[in-house]
Image (cartoon, rainbow, N blue to C red; front, side):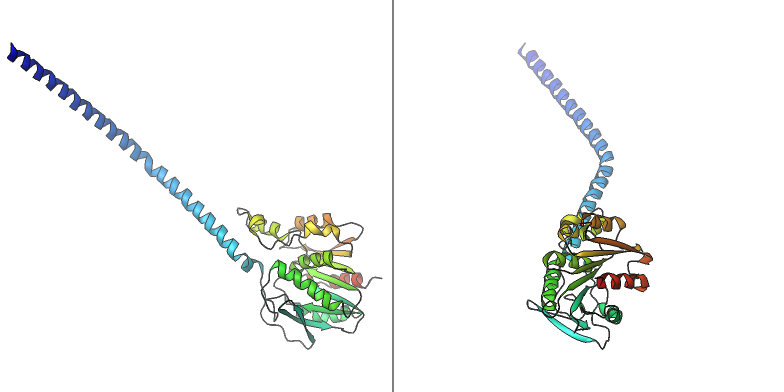
Amino acid sequence: MKTEKKTNRKTSRTKKTDKTKKAKKTKKKTAETTGRRKQTRNPMKTFITSALVVMAVGYVATATYLYINQRKFLYFPPQGVLPTSEQTVEIQSGTVTLRGWVVNEDSEDAVIYFGGNAERPEASLEDFKYLFNNQAVYIINYRGYGESDGSPTEKNLCSDAMAIYDRVVLDHNNISVIGRSLGSGVAVYLATQRKVHRLVLVTPFNCLADIAQGIYPVFPMRLIMKDKYDSEQIASVITAQTLIIRAENDEVIPAESTDRLISVFNKNYLETAIIPEAGHNNIQDYTQYYMLLRDFINRQ
């Protein structure tokens, strides 16, 4: 009897062991099947995940590059100057020496000209000399441009504009200001800080950060730009008689940008004009442009 019971126990244990082994095999097969299914799906998921990571890293890297190097994309200073026989002048702005020219120096009134970004403003000396024969005309290169010392930033250029004005006003009475393109941002700022007789803005913009946002729409340029030249925010306080000259085919400054700037000016002080067929970079080739400048600045 005892032997029979032992045999029954062994048989029972054997059956349990077999069941356990069978269950483990079944579980293993199920795991293997699931694993194969996962492996079938993983390559696509891995590809998508990798692509998203690469895009995110690329986006951040590009945004960082734009932030660090933004002034290289903003300022294009010509080096050296064109030969000219006109009188040179140096103006001190803090520790920086700004260099340029003056014509008709003995005139009672004066015009200060702030040029465009890559412009060689001395190329206009001869035209301005005869156009404004009743005014002294000061054309001073921005810092970092031509033979002026230093490096350009919005803060520096605006500070320099006030230094130039403060030097010019020592020798002249009514000071008019002309700002073209980039120079329009500098001119608008100066007109909010100093007494300007007449203000002319040529192919102006409302805010450079908005222009940059249109060029790089996928990046938060309004946030990352250091030099915004936000004329739209400050122009409403200007009380100088102002003329805005637009180029009909301006390929650099969108029409809506200039429209937004115009909208904030006090209409009692503002005039606007457009040069038909002119572009942003060749507006100076049109006689009407010079006639507008002459008539407005010389108006009694």
